[in-house]
Image (cartoon, rainbow over all chains, first blue to last red; front, side, top):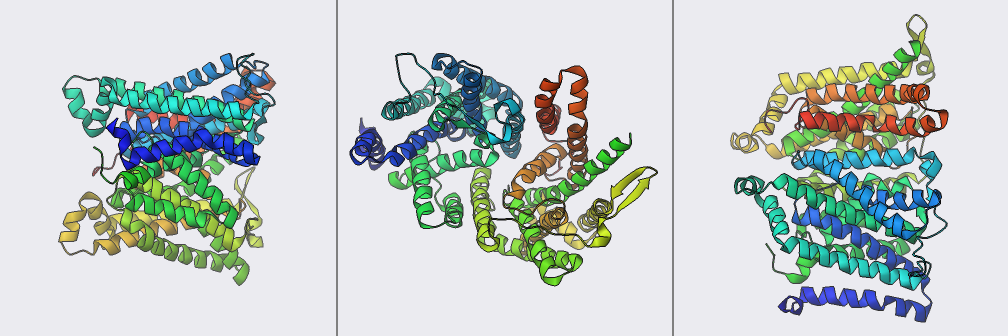
Length: 315
Length: 305
């Protein structure tokens, strides 16, 4: 329990309380835009949580994570177009295909190290981007408008904005819990061990490659789920979902919030998207401020916002 | 067959362009150990500078030289202000910081030149096509690109392998502390190398500007191709970058030109129309994946790293 009694715990809990109460505020003021923005923040935070699992805890700097966002989204869109509207089919397919793609990418990329890993994951994501660009039947370059959200017959109606919001929030909290459980398990300790010294992990008998691959697949699957949510949220998919700058955004969310901390991805996503929104109201050229801001974060804010709040560094 | 030759020439031309970008990237990575995502922004700047100066001076060549100088200076200013503190940090910090620079440059260009994009027109004598072999006509300008880039590549090779500056660059790549200890101004060397990389990227941008439209984000797609090139060639190796750039350029162009037709003979029209273009775009990434499986350090791994 003492975990929650420090400033960093207070901020995390505070943020969750705000997120939980937001629909009430929105329904009182009729602020539909806030609901849309925060649903987006929550969904992107799920993607960032999944990236944090491999990048923050596993030291695998994947620069192609938006690919899974796209695969999850396209799974929903393509199945809808082909007449399969049930979410009970769409979502598992989104997760499974993302996991399969992660398995293929991971099996090839995890042989490489350092900058090679960064770039090979980036290249695979670009490959999927071009594949989606060529899908004329599903909109090609223009993207595809999905006219019907995933159907959970009788159980859930995703057209209900508030319900969809709480579903996303529940999934976000579940994924934060899942990642915390994973990294504190024996499996997660091997992953973290491999981040600090992979050779040593192998020497004491752990097949580090296989452990990392499983971790990579879990992250891909989780991000695929975020993609399915995003397609349902925007009712639209396009190759732009997985352009490489989108992967860059996800990395920014994680690092800004605090690499390898449970709530960092959520804090980073919320901070960045809210700042971007606020800046875009003041100036047309928000990048002039966001860009140098990112450079300063990279240079001086090693622990991200989480580190700033908590002060002390965690190993 | 004639079509094939024409496409092969297009491939070589794309390869030359990729080499200009990849050489700078690989130099900067090999010597400063810096992953630079803002390299595509310098390519974009080169194109914008060229379009502006060519319009102002009414001369393509003069505009190109001014643009080259302007990108070199921009690179030096960028290095001193923003890149220098990134040296010695981990690659994730590089990616994050230079990604921020990329966002910055996109909006800076939009602020200065507006969102519309620009065109750069060639002098009329460049617009002709020449007969390269009987029956095959090829645009003169594209041949000029190939020739000029080959000259630049030779000059670069000569500079790195045969001059004192090149010796220092190579020494800096293998042991920067020792070079510093021997009294070489390593900071200045790094700034010069970054400026050189910037000028090469700007050069690629200005050469390509008359063929494509000059627009915001033009460097983002080609940057990834340049990364693929240096991964295939082996990070830090200029020779590797040259071989890989031509390989990638030819495979990409030939793939785009012929795969849809080849598929049409196997599959029905509908399926090949969908599959063809995507498969062609994915080809070089598959090539890269294949090469990395067998040679995780690329074709010409740099000896020092």
